[in-house]
Image 1 (cartoon, rainbow, N blue to C red):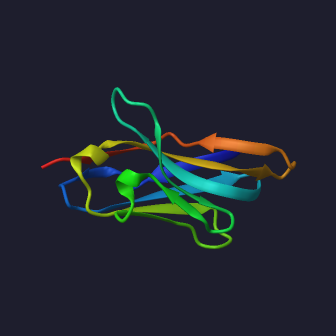
Image 2: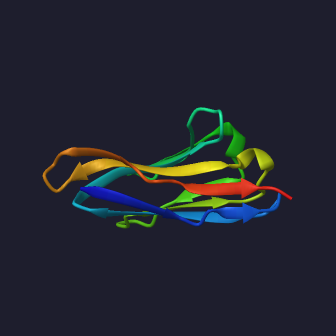
Length: 120
């Protein structure tokens, strides 16, 4: 099995920064991509940022220029650096990873999420 553990959420004032960490562990053969999603109360879960095996990235328009997703090569850990945070960034942030396990089976795993609140 593959497991994800997220950390780094919290309360921050508008304009502040937070960094989220997502660590994958377990029977991992290869990770094809890691991404961050968020879900605010009463809203659907939406993509925030994702990074594929080749290093390509994709961001939601609402976070472009403010958020950066990164992952060190050969690492099963992804980071989301969030700068210039706005109240509308308040949500529960979930990490997702896709890849193949050691039995060469596809996995698509979600973490439990970490809460981010932006408020003065």
